[in-house]
Length: 137
Image 1 (cartoon, rainbow, N blue to C red):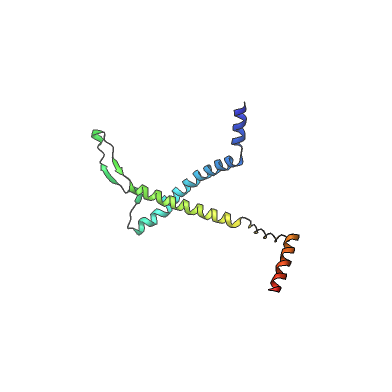
Image 2: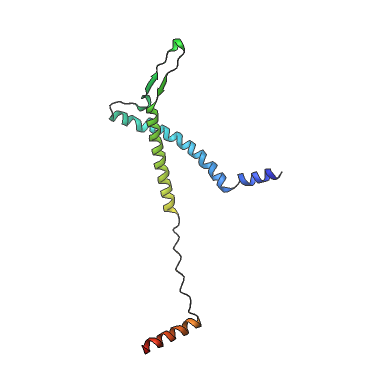
């Protein structure tokens, strides 16, 4: 029974719940970014580059041969380019969100420096002796 109670306390901590929400929102955000790259960003890039569609770009190592049941083996660098673009968009969006959150955080004023402590009786006496000796010299 103790393990179940410990697990419940662990699972219900704020950080774990926040992490779970973040992962779910991140997964949904990933599909939005995938659509953004595939459907919005890549067509203009393809137009600028003369109709190049990066998602179809590949280096074929072994061509498919259905008669011999050989599947195509290819390096799909176009998909990699799309993935890198998606990563850059996600990284930029996260950067902007963190920047906004940091700007919205209440700026805490710096603590005032502590005043110098009052001199002790011995320090006052030593200062007085020093000043008297300085006058004699």
